[in-house]
Image (cartoon, rainbow, N blue to C red; front, side, top):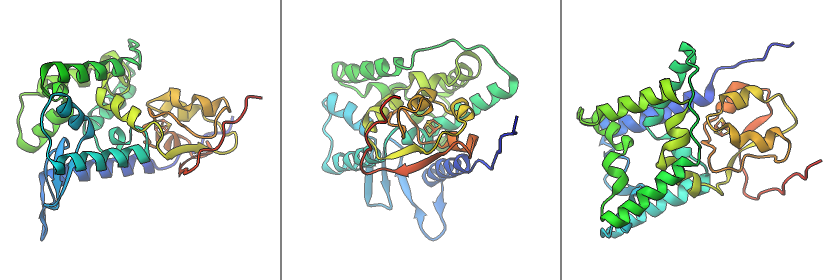
Length: 272
Ligand code: SF4
């Protein structure tokens, strides 16, 4: 059998660069520019002018009956439109710091040969999302923000606050020892929110030809999204659960997969 050609993981390098640059922007001042951004990923102000708000946080706040200022509402709208236009869970793969932790757990799991995998339905995250939304409305509070590991991790990195360390350790061990890609792929309501928001995004993984795609499916954190391409029923990944992470392309550059902006959706390929 012909050995599969591997290449430098460009997509992984690009993602890590963006994730770390965003984190660093919150933590450090730039020489000559000072602090580029203040706040956190839930609500931030860039260059002292541009306020950006996480639309999931804004939704919880509105349901909780909290008044949001015009700047916060516009900031949430800007972020929501950007993610909706790009599509999928691009936030999870390119921005979220928890992805660094869960990717590390997955890498370690693979290296250690951990086989235990207790399957958790990928639909559970939508249930957690519904519960968080309902709890915000019923409890007049931003329910998910009380335990949101994204906020906890960022607070730990920025201020050295360790009160949420136990949750981050549990989450890491859950992915490492209990369930493959358990947190991001099955439980996190933030990912569920962005999967719904980015359902019709125009940045998509497209396929050309009929390349060998088993390595891409194995590398994909959401392998179900590649099924229509592998079966030849679609020429692009349309699922909002695709993270736009590029792992499928890093895994096998000969798979005929590429990230493309598709303004107009082509009709589905009819089954043979
Ligand atoms: S299809 Fe590719 S880009 Fe989408 S989640 Fe899977 S590996 Fe990432």
